[in-house]
Image 1 (cartoon, rainbow, N blue to C red):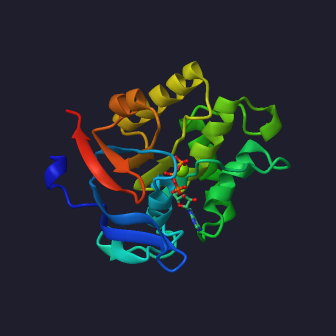
Image 2: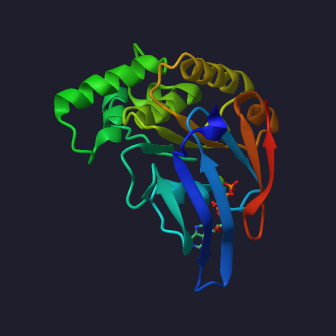
Length: 228
Ligand code: ATP
Ligand code: MG
């Protein structure tokens, strides 16, 4: 079962402060991500949710505490982790295919393999037929799919998503959520665990096995709800 599986990600008591400790954003945050689970993260604006995700992705280094991925300390962006950012830019002069391929930039993968993986991700996430489109020709939902495809081309074991549906209208969000859950439950993505920030409790209940609630000032895990 999930509870017995070896952890993929272990966050051990990390703290994050700025201005030499004057401003504490995260205080002693601990969390474990195991294979097979989707974990939600809820909390007020400014409570440090994005900061926590960026730390797990290796983009910022916590002031104290440690983070491991498959037992190894996280530094730089580990190969098995990718992140869909709260707000991300698509390059307007590049096609959907080229924007997705960028997810593999700097990962040491040759051009043919990059193309193959990008087409796979595009197909998986429901963007087929849009390969040659430019970002300005896309709806908000399709744009968000490009962001997801760009994270999926990496073939991550751990997918971090920072409010992936918040910019979408209710129906579009529901469609994308359902598509993503179908991919997950059918095992068509190689992803083993998802950590997802959301402001939407209903979304968390629908998607997650566990939901962590953050307190603010400073951010710490105040409650955990397990949804069986
Ligand atoms: P939201 O729900 O609005 O996205 P959040 O929970 O994701 O909020 P964070 O973006 O993690 O919150 O920010 C937490 C706090 O840390 C905020 O007060 C923010 O201003 C502060 N912060 C983030 N990055 C830095 C930085 N590089 N220097 C100083 N303060 C920062
Ligand atoms: Mg945020």
